[in-house]
Length: 272
Image 1 (cartoon, rainbow, N blue to C red):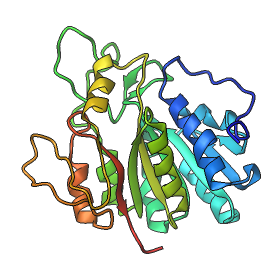
Image 2 (cartoon, rainbow, N blue to C red; image 1 turned 120 degrees about the vertical axis):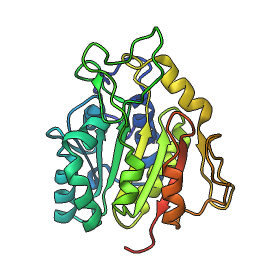
Image 3 (cartoon, helix red, strand yellow; image 1 turned 180 degrees about the horizontal axis):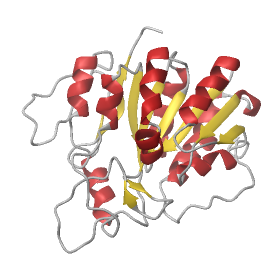
């Protein structure tokens, strides 16, 4: 079962890239555990490191245009509602050139899963600042794209954006925790409506090492009914996590990614 969903194409990612974790989550856990036949699944991508995934998964796949994976995924799902359709793209692909498509797939609530791979940088084109590049205190080490642009502040918060557009399913995983990430993706696939999943991912080539060390050390898992672990700077008091409450989800989304990244389901609407 673990090899049924892999092609013979060898991934061309850098050793240590978080995309290996996402690939393993899809091919070794999500697709086999849900029992989705290969010919009942379609993966659509744009352009970028993460957009190579369709070549490594033995399902239908389209490596499409930069920023247009969401559009093509919608068309495929509308043409064949029985397909399990997953759109995969990076932070630049989905939230720069492709950002204009996201609010419209939300309001249509088409039943596709959008996996946004956030490595905080344009990696395939050699390390330029992306819409999600964090602002670190300037020390001796260089920012990942200092030779191209100075860092941008404030960064774009994808979780807040998705909640603000009223996505019916919003969640976040981390590439280094494959079992948890697979569980989140499975929930997104089973959700009746549009699902947005952000995946925090290290870029071992262009990001300072402290980026992901900090994220992993401070990550907090969301579990329904359990008290939310808030950042030290928060003025809120902890509350029991309720993924059906979008007001609480919006408050959670304000937590800075380098201070207290939350992992799990932020919000899941019940209306189809």
